[in-house]
Image (cartoon, rainbow, N blue to C red; front, side, top):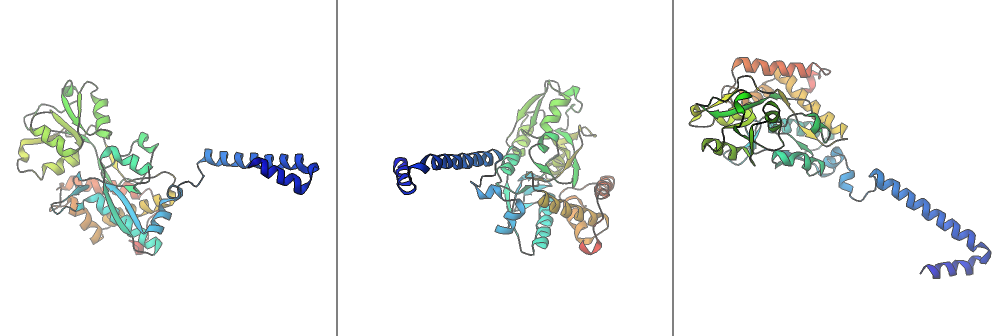
Length: 329
């Protein structure tokens, strides 16, 4: 085929132009191949339009916000007796969805996808989900892979143990079987405070709770507030306790989003700060949402001291940003 094309050009244009034309064709091909190589190296070749879209563009096109969450992170994100995903982080996702609707001027569907801790970041990177809100904590290592919103709650690593257990200090964990969920900050914290603890991995929290009850592990390391959430739902709650009183770590709970999506992240932060500002200012709807998870009749009851601490934490966050106008709350 190449011979036919060259011969045709030679006949039409004359032999004297053949060398010049071949050189020009070669030059153009080289330019095109070079341009393609540059585009491929920079990742801008449009081989998969979905990955080229920002989250905001995707939501505007599909009118769907796909959110990763958990099924057993009480009170943040869990499945209730009716099989519905509920919790404090789910309420935050509703706030984010409503803010997107306001900005885009269209109704948005919130699609929830249940993920295990180890699935969260890979699913965000693969753009299978637009955001993850469950009980995720900020770490610098995770921040290299995804972007974090502002923190809308604070937690820390503690141990769930049986009532008669003497565990509670780093020294007491030497050689003890401590249950963890892989790739969580709880795992990292226990490795740090007691490198000689015997870590036992579980796929989910329910498996760990059962193992603890059966005596297969000596403790389960988790966010203290999540252990408290499980404990308050148990009939034999007096058979367990949470130690130590002061958590091994303090961590901010935040949402995770794909990197390089600043406009979407701005929307997420605006929605979260607007919610927290409403709680601090006594907005009835926002206070009711907070109390649904942490009030006297909420999923987890927290005493007045802890409630005041939660409000103070919100105040610290919102003080770092420009005040949102009252007519937008």
